[in-house]
Image (cartoon, rainbow, N blue to C red; front, top):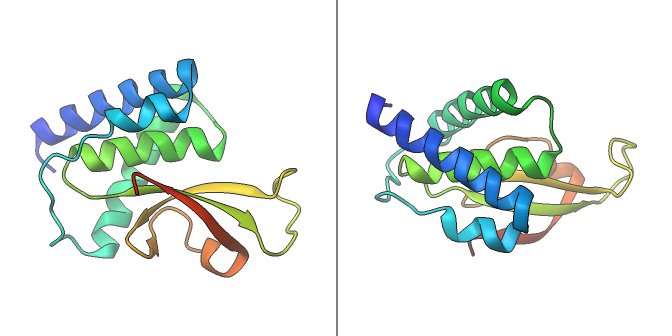
Length: 130
């Protein structure tokens, strides 16, 4: 990742989080502009990038709900050319980790990027952008 990409990703991360916290998901999604479409990146490379952005998000905003984190990481990845999507799912089995049973994570196509366990434990309900 170049310095320009890092700055662009950080800018998108902050803008998306601000819009999400103020006006919700529908206000935040239009801010997730895809800068180029770099589908040549491998899944492991996308996961490494996602975890870097997760660390940045936690450093800037502290511990958050899964949806807050997924919004930020999705926006940052899309800003550097990775066509990530925010995915929301419902727990197929009660793991006792969430009172609602709903969880949000970042995906690249059919592959979860931030939470690999969700494939076995959650049923996908929605994706943004679709």
